[in-house]
Amino acid sequence: MSTAATADEGNAAFCAELVRSHDFDRYAATLFLDPAHRRAALALYAFNVEIVRVRGQVSQPLPGEIRLQWWTDMLAGVGHGGVEGNPVAAELQRAISRYALPVAPLSRLIEAHIFDLYNDPMPDRAALELYLAETSSALLAQAARLLGPISDAVDHLAHHAGLAIGAARLLGTFPRDAARRQLFVPAEFLAQSGADPEDAFAGKVTPELRAALDQLVGEARTHLDQALTLLSEAPREIRPALLPLALAKRDLAQMARPEWDPLQPQPRTRLATLWTLWRASRSRVFRG
Image 1 (cartoon, rainbow, N blue to C red):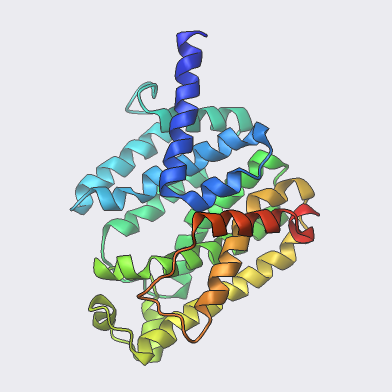
Image 2 (cartoon, rainbow, N blue to C red):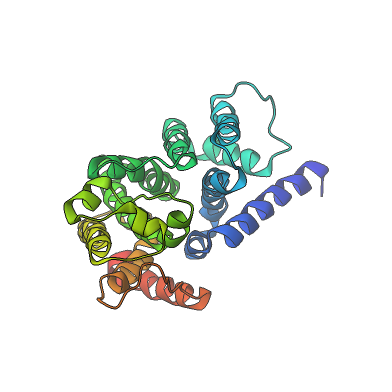
């Protein structure tokens, strides 16, 4: 095997392990994809991991912005030359080239995650939906492009699916975010319920804060229902890209229960994740 081929396989293996270690939900979902497309999906998800985890790798916003700018420049093809030294960048460029993926949504994903570097409040529902649309929804739309032809209908499906999945994930990381004085719950929801953000930062769930969180759960479940309705009419070949909806459905159902404690998350086991995805993969809505 040539040195180039060995390096190529090494890049793919690096991305797979990165996603498996840092985003098991999406890694597990790729196990149900056609093997011909799995490598590209893992490249997309590894890129997403690299962008999302910048927030945890820096103590100040500026170094984080510099790291994110590197990825923006890489996508634009300026500033850094080759990407052979970065396996995620190399794999992402390979996927972009092979599937003619549009770069603009990936650049907007990076820009949206600049918000993560600061502890600014999420002002309202519209701001949160835009954030999720440019991150979670955009990633789903790109994954769908790997599997079949894209259309306005598929983009619309990915939009609602991404809002549901993204909101469920933010609710799941609420304890971690609150501990670092960052809230993705819209200030609009907090104000409507009379919740004080300081209670969240102090690890105290008041009835008012719970009401704001319940509102976010309700919004997410509405988008979930819309996505599942649209999924039943989507092209069969792109449906496996939407499998993470099954995990969001499971999580949001638990979060809607009165006994749910948002500061005491009950993370899914890997076995539960795989079981949920396997059952969904065999269901009529995902198989067509």
